[in-house]
Image 1 (spheres, rainbow, N blue to C red):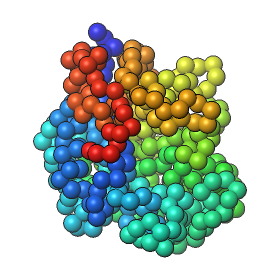
Image 2: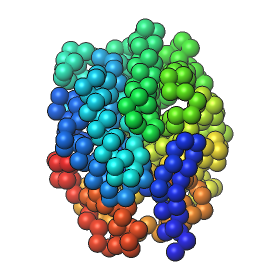
Image 3: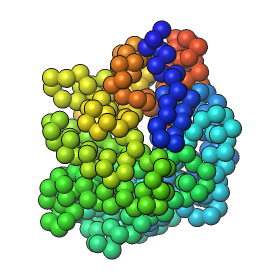
Length: 368
């Protein structure tokens, strides 16, 4: 079946070489005691690699900045002991035949003061807002901005030094980088706000610093989204022309692969075209794009207001996804919740066993 074969064709871009087009999507699991990945986390990623994924993108890992974390028991990506633990994860994934990239993360305004171990440190945002119009977080100074840029570069350099194959920057879902992108939370009147181009500056400085830290050939991915946790209807670009203004500077700064997050991958991004967000991103930038959003599922995990409440997320037909991939609308497919339910999702699909996959259930999030 040509469409199915497209999912299991090797992928190569620069020095990143993958056995297939299946990516494990990053998903926060809150299972890293002491903010360091333990044996349970090593095994969690090993099983998905052994299950056939070509690329593992880790859960969000906090950079070396005091306001980066916003949740209990998430892993950090700095400090010799923690990085040594992450090296064990990378080694396990490599032994199972997959490649791996850490996702570097700063929670920005999603942090509330009191989250341990940083305790009273407040959330940091471009304008003190976690949601538009409500100032209840720390407004970042130039010194804060410079420190965060340096911390992202430090994390990227560590990824290369500790045996990872690429690095992903988390610029989606209403976290810090995305809060600079979004006019709703970026009301600055300096060089970091006031226009689309200025709202890009923070991300561009991070990408340029990361590129300088890892060199010209180490793969750098950027995850981005239109929607925000704070507002599912939010949009950074209303038209293809506006999307081009947004994407091209990021590509020019050094992004190799764009990871384009939609809540539902099958939804067209703009009227008049069936292309989804990854399809438009690939068309505009010429760079490889990863599509993600309810792949293999037929129900939303977190419904928006007015939508159907959560129900069991069963396995869904992949024909549309495979046809789009075969037509080169996008290059890679990230699978999230379906791979929590089925660590061997890729191998099962390759073997024609889609009907035997387990449905995703919310209670599966309680354990790895």
